[in-house]
Length: 441
Image (cartoon, rainbow, N blue to C red; front, side):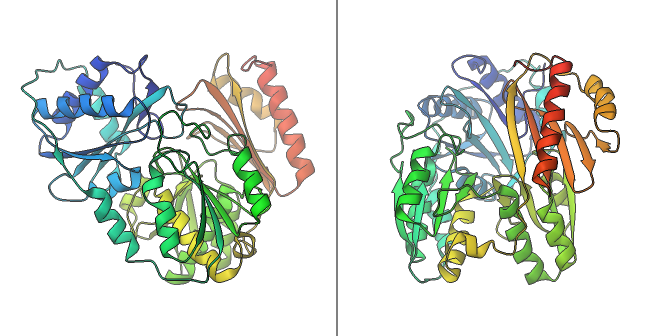
C-alpha cells in the first residue's frame, strides 16, 4: 500500500481520496500496531465533514477493541495534551489542519508525542491486513478541553492592558485563545471567532492572502500584536500593528533565545526550511541547532534531553509544557510578553530579520536526482543536502526545493543576508525549474 503519511499525519479530499475503506483499515491497523493500548481519545476540528468522520472512525476504533473517549470539537493542542492521560495514551485528531475545506484527515499522538516515522511505517504496513470488526460501543465523553484550559490558565499572570487582535479562522481556537489572552489582561479584538465548517471569514491557512481583511484591521486599530490560527490551532501566524507578517523563523528564534537565557544553553531541533536567525541566536548564547526533515523534529527531541525548543515554521514546541505544536500557548505567551514590552516589534527588536521567500508552483513532475545534477552547475559553490528536498547552502544564503507533502506543489524557499543576492538566487532557481520542465509557467 502507498504510504499515507505526510509531514504531519495524512490529509486527503473527503469525500474523495479519503474513503470509508481507508478509515476501516486504519482503525484495524492501529489495533495491530499498538496491541497494549486500550484507550483512545478522539477529537475533531470545525470542518463540516469532521463530525461524520469522527463518528465513523470512533465506531470503527471501538469495533476493533479500543475503549474510545470522545473529546468532541477541540483544538489539536487539547487532544495532544489529553493523550498523556493513562486511560487513553493514544490520541486521534480528525483534521486537515490548514488545508482547504474539502480536505480532511488524521493526526495521531501517543503519550503526547507525534508518532515517529517508524511507527507511521508500521501502521501503513498493517493496513494491508483485512479487518475483522466486532460490535462498536458508544464513545465515552471526555472533558479534555476544561483540563487543558485549567492547566494553561495556571501559568497566566495579569499584565498591563494592550490591544491584541485574534483571528481564530472560524476554527477550534475560538474555545481557548481569546479567553486566555483576556485573562492575561489583553484588550482582545476577535475576528472569525464563530466556529463554522463553512469558513465564512477566510480559508483555513493563515497566510497573508487569506488574512488581507484581518491585516487591514490590524493597521486600522494599531494593535500591539496580531495572531491568527489554522483550523486545529496547532499553528499560529504573527503580525504587527502595521498589518505586516513577522517571520516564523524569528518567532522560533525568540522562544529559543528565552530558553537559552533560562537554561544557560541548550539545543534547538528544527527543520530544513528554518532560516539563519536561529543560528545567530545559538551563537550569541552558546546554544546548538540541529535541522531535520519537516515533521521530524520530535523524533530527535524525544531522544535528546538537552532540547529546550523544537518545531518548524508556524509550530513552536516547548517540551517543558508538552511535546506538541501548540499555537494557543504560543499566542498567549507572546501576548503576555508584548503586554510587558510595548509591541511585537519591540519584543523582536534583537532578533535578526533576513530577506526570505517561500513560493509555491504547481508541478508537472518531480525528479530529485535530475534536480541535484543540474543544480551543481547552476550553484557551483553551494554545499548540497538532500535529507528533505534539495537544499543548497551558500555563504550567508541558502536555497531549498521541496515537494509538498500534502499538495501537488513544488515549494521554493530561499534566504540571504543580502536582498539583491536573494533576488538573483530566486531568478536562477526558477530558470532551473523551467529548464527541467518541472513547473507550469
